[in-house]
Amino acid sequence: MQKNAHPHRDCNGKIAVVHNGIIENYQELKKELEKDDCGFKSQTDSEVIPNLISKFYKGDLKKALIKAMKRLKGSYALGVISSDEPERLLVARSDSPLIIGLGKGENFIASDVPAILKHTKKVIYLENKQLAVIKKDRVNVFDLKGKEVSPKIDTISYDVEAAKKFGFKDFMLKEIYEQPRVVSKILSQWMSLEGNIRVRDLDLNKDFLKEIEQIVIVACGTAFHAGLVGKYIFESLVRLPVWVDFASEFRYRKPIIKKNTLLIAISQSGETADTLAAVQEAKKSKIKVISVCNVLGSSLIRESDINLNTYAGPEISVASTKAYTAQLMTLYLLALYLARLKQNLNEDKLKKAISSLEKVARGQKKILARSRDIKRIARRHLHFGAFLYLGRGINFPNALEGALKLKELSYIPAEGYAAGEMKHGPIALIDEYRAVVCIANDSPVYDKMLSNIQEGLARKGKIIAIASEGNEEIKNYVKEAIFIPKIEPLFSPLFAIIPLQLLAYYIACLKGYDVDKPRNLAKSVTVE
Ligand code: F6R
Image (tube, rainbow, N blue to C red):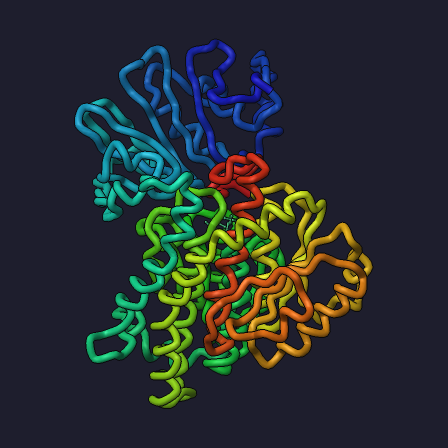
């Protein structure tokens, strides 16, 4: 509805505000402002903000904004202008992210770096409860007392070129194809010339890391699925108990966190409101936080004790692809580091694991080279009204991720399940109208997956199998098989995810949807 669209103005039409966030006490403020004869036009919480500023306005917008900030509860990033002071733009933040891009004779505001990257690489990350007065040739930052503070100016190291499509039809396809380069980059950042894992921030915290007894992982969406894979990785390599939570659940559940717990927060953007709130909740128990994050300077990095950069470069497409594999790669390396530190892994096993990781980029390239076959399978299945994704063990989270990619891009109902759960309900869904994607790579649970495939076939489900190269047997069962290179099963999620991303991508493209900007979704979810 147009009247709910930003900017919102005060009832005199003089002060205009754009707002990202949620004002929790807006009902109370609205009642109070209505008593002063202030009429509201929209159904938004945001409209109280220009009216509150207007109430305090006595010829100085900055003073009025500070007074309003002291009354607002909740999260906000604000852009404020007044027709009385047209040469100044004021901004303020509390919990929601806000960055100021510094140009020549021009300045910019945004929630996230990629939005301003084509204009400038110099940015100020406004701190919580700070405000700034922006003119075309000047930026002054203040605290809530109105005292000027000198902000840190960061230079973004992303290459602006990295945010271009480079001949790909869209960003998503470009980002899918970037994955081999991203995993190689991560490996090169983590490994010393002598072949040892070396990360300065981890080395500096060795004493504490040696003592950890439990790992808790919090994240949302795709990053949550990476966290679920992380559980299998850490349990297998580090032999520590791991619990993974949706950040949105963790933050409200009053979780019981023992001392010597390590919290790992995973986020591409580093600005997801629920993940940030979960970290703040965990920090009340005085535990240390490692962030696995793709955006330097983001709020999450500033909240964390140790930051592990995922080196994926800017991810522009709303659906996360390269950030996911970068998160997985980082979790493998972190697990190997901790396993070594806790003496759970001898040199031989460590070397074998590193050599498997070194094979990933080449293997991913091989899968990408078969994208035409995956496109053909997509064409044959795009009319299916529903999909089921099944996986077991470390590829169960990939089943969830494959289903998420399909539903967010193609709007086709898709569910991911642990294949062993089929008999407990979901098998009732299978008939000739359901496509069933089964991750059946070589692994200790391959035979079990094969039984699941047979159960699906018996109910006339249309099975698409993801199997390991050299598996001739699978062709006796299914018409559609996508082959991935052989690798130690622990590392197979780094291969199995690629066909799942491509399948979702091609189905959405063939249906004519905008894959980079699926409906109803935002790249950074900076509000609850
Ligand atoms: C799905 C997707 C989302 C994000 C989620 C968390 O393709 O991109 O599910 O993974 O919103 O975002 P970050 O990782 O920025 O915290």
